[in-house]
Image (cartoon, rainbow, N blue to C red; front, side, top):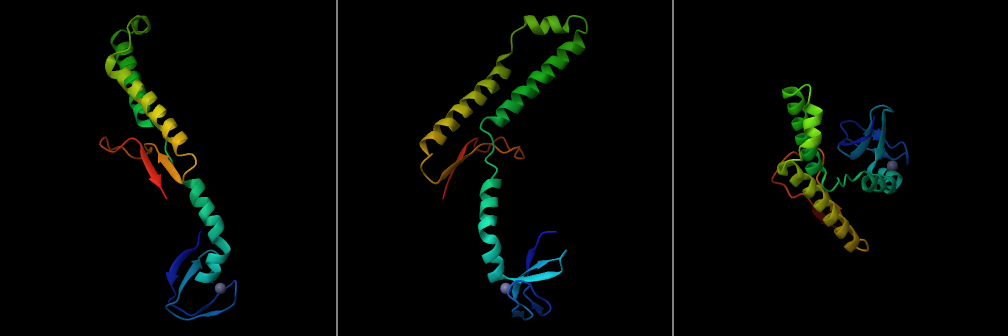
Length: 151
Ligand SMILES: [Zn+2]
């Protein structure tokens, strides 16, 4: 179980430095180890790795991912509909018919977003700026597909 920060409801002793922590002190509580760590010791022992973890865990998304998903969804549904309506010649019809424009538009959008993201990555490579593609969990259609985050 991970530690969490809280205001102590009982007096404690920091497991790192041994200092007394009176009631109401803001400190870290590790429920599994039943140990209290004062804020100063917590910062000193975990901050560098926590910052690294935060940076490595930043979900930067994937440019064009939502367009790619939509393209695949439409393609899969069209193929399923065709094979269901024409069980014997469905595969032949799919091979002979072209891909409808409403599907290829999403594939073009995917490639375009990837190109823009690659360009932004290249242009911001030396700066403290990150580009963020569409996140998996976001299903909103009105959100920007690409964002730039500077810090
Ligand atoms: Zn301490």
